[in-house]
Amino acid sequence: MSLITRITPALVRAWRPCSRYTDAARADYIDLDAIIPGGITPYDLADRRRVRAVPVADRLWALRHVIPDREMRLLACTWAERALRRDRRAGREPDPRSWAAVAVSRRFAAGDATVGERAAAWDAAGAAAWAAWDAAWTAVGGAKAAARDAAKAAAWAAAATEVRQQLRDVRRVLEASR
Image (cartoon, rainbow, N blue to C red; front, side):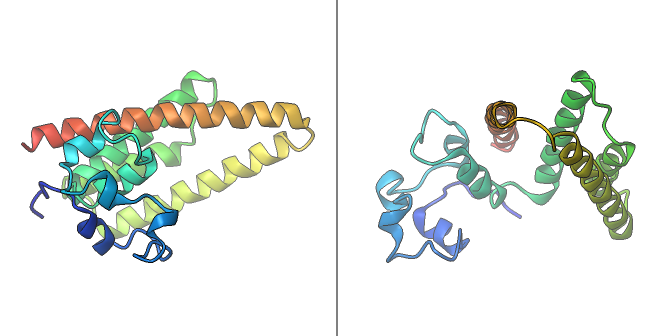
């Protein structure tokens, strides 16, 4: 896969961002033709100061189409490890299956793991995630609405911080490919 040097509105539409994003419905969504009429470099798209009108989640979605699979997989491993370390620092030891899945994914990116190993690690990590969800759901079952709302606000703030860090990570990958 060769690195795309310019992301244009036509290219984004060709990637089919969502079934509702059509030329007719464009006024209800982000009007890329107005925001980036001649296109934008992937690096500039990753820089949140350059195109403030495009939500961060949409930028990451578009950049997924630009960054080669191997580098994207390694970025995802970095982000997963960061989240696991954050849980550990918060006193919640992550499930070993999650750490193992990240390790297998890194090996897969290096060509040292099979598709079968990757699938098995994915299934195990999914089972670990559902187990954690069930435990959390049970634990907050009796929580008051205010505590739940505060936890949700804190989670959104943490997610926003993580996404900004992910954009910085993406910019480093793009800089290395210049």
